[in-house]
Each structure stands twice: as C-alpha cells, then as structure tokens.
Figure 1 (tube, each protein chain N blue to C red):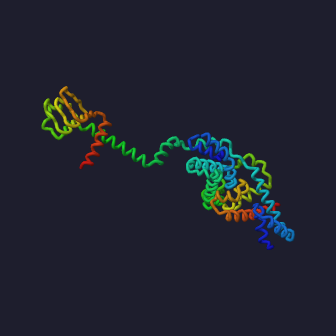
Figure 2 (cartoon, each protein chain N blue to C red):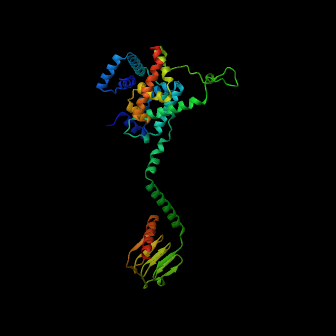
Figure 3 (cartoon, rainbow over the protein chains, first blue to last red):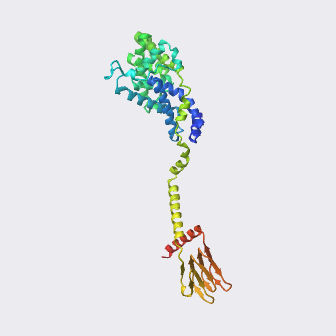
Length: 188
Length: 204
C-alpha cells in the first residue's frame, strides 16, 4: 500500500517540484501550528516552517518509506523548535535594562510583532488563558502536550517522533496535564 | 484505594488506557472521596479544553508555500548523475582507468613514427628509406612485422605478415603462408598492443 505522502516523496525525489509543493500544502499548517504554540511568535513559527521543509527537501533521499511521513516531519520540526527554545532562554533577559540607552529594554529591540494569525483575533478569554498556560510549560512537557493535544498524536506516535520510550511520554503527559490543571484551576 | 493511585488511574483513563475493571475501581473510589472527585473533574476539563484547541489551529500565511518553494536549492538537477557515481564507485574507477589508459596509448601511438621492422629472418629483407622490400626469389622464415613504413612483397614469407600504419603491396610473385594483418586504426592498434603484451607475458 502506497499512501499519498510516499507517492509524493517519490515524485519529489525525481525532481518533481509540484509534488513537493503538495507536500508543503499538506503539512504547512500543522507545522505552523506546532511551531507557533511552541515559540509563541509568528515570525519564528514561519522560520521554523520554512527550515523544516528545507530539511525535508534536502533529506528526501534518506526518508525511510516504512516510517510514517508525519512522524518524520514532526521530528524535524519539533527538534528545530526545541533548539530554538534552548537558544532563546538563557542568553538574555528581555526585562533587563540596556546600559547605553535609558528606558530601553529587550522588548523594544525586537521588531514589534503584534499581528497574530487572523483566527486569533476572536480568541476567547478561556483560550487565551490556556495558551498562556501552555506557554509557561517547561520545554520538555510543552512539546509532548502540543503533539498530544494540538496535533492529536497518539502516545506511541509521540514516542516515535521524540525517540523516547512510551513510558517516558506517558509520565510527561501526566505531569504536563497536572501542571496545566493547576494553572487553569483558579479560572475554572 | 490510595488517592495517589487514584490520580494515576485518572491520567490513564484520560489516555484511554484503563481496563474496564480498573475503571470500576476508580469510580468506586471517586464516589467515596470528594477531593479526588474534584481533581478528576478539573483534569477532565483541562483535557477537553486542550483538545478543543486543535479546532482553532491558525493557518500559515498563504504566501508561505511560495516562499518555501523559491528557497529550495536548485542543484537537484545534477543529482542523478552524481548519485550514480556515488552508487557505483567500482564501475566509475574502472571507467576512469580505461579512459586514462586509452588517452596515454593514443598519445604513444602518435609518438612513434619511426620505422620498425621485426622478424626472425631479417637478413633477407631490403630496407630503402621507409620502404621494406622482400625481393623476388627470397624467402623469409617466420613472421614479419613492419611499423610505420611501406611494405613491398615480391618473394615469400613463411609466416604471418603484420603491417602497422603503412601500406602493403603484394606482387603477383608474392607468397605469404600465414595471415596478413593491416593495422592502421587507433583501436586496432591498441588491441594489437594489448594482445601482444599478453602473449609476451605468456611466453616470457
């Protein structure tokens, strides 16, 4: 049985650009959603999507057809997000004031990105609270919770994506769920 | 049931990973423990809220596909050729070896334009300039090979006659008992050199 992804990757490998464009169409929203929730930044999410597909393209010849394509692309995207999070965190604090200019802090150095995806315009208060709660999750729980709930992957699939035993994934889902419950509980 | 165990079972239940019997046990505990009942309710709500987010997935900007496609590297076109080389290193090495051999042989072929006469019985042969003559009435025992010269046969050759890069004239009186070979193509010449080299090796 040849599923659509396998057929498209074979065509793309032969140099068919339209086949690759179809792969992009199939997955770009999923990857964008994943990256946007992981990084809470529209520009960075777009970067991640672009970088993910670039890596997929470069490594098409190494893609193992026995593996699910979604697992493979989620692994690439998740790793890119985790790397980005790791780099972001300890280097500097946005709240620290800069020495040279008074009143300048890290926030004012970042090009303002108040535009959110259109669907976010109508966010309810509850949704905003959940998004903030997800954003405050430590990275190792964040990726698991996003893959589980927002991408609707099974525990086994998450274990394949992250290359960790299912028992570890299970523990992380439990702790992540407990963490979110405590965050959301006062608002429920 | 301990509350700790109950919480663990609650999570398993939400993971869709709890047997019927264990579900019954959990239910029994929840009925008797208000604190756990409360926690279960909160966990269930958290779970449902989280799942509801997948319906509010933001879509990537429309022009992103275009941007991705135009950022792809273009060198893919060379790939099949390079890929073939990578997959068949032995064949590639052999091909390069043959090419080098061929080129060097051809350049040698161009180089020697001197008259060379080989044979066992050369006393009978008359050489005038670049012309090798076997006069009438004379007979040569064994093979005769002439490179880069004209060959005129009036007498007898009791063996093979090979003419390389030259012309051959046989008079009506000529008699050659063996084979006559006239070689003037690079490839023929190459083949001759190679078979000669092998027979040389074999007889040495």
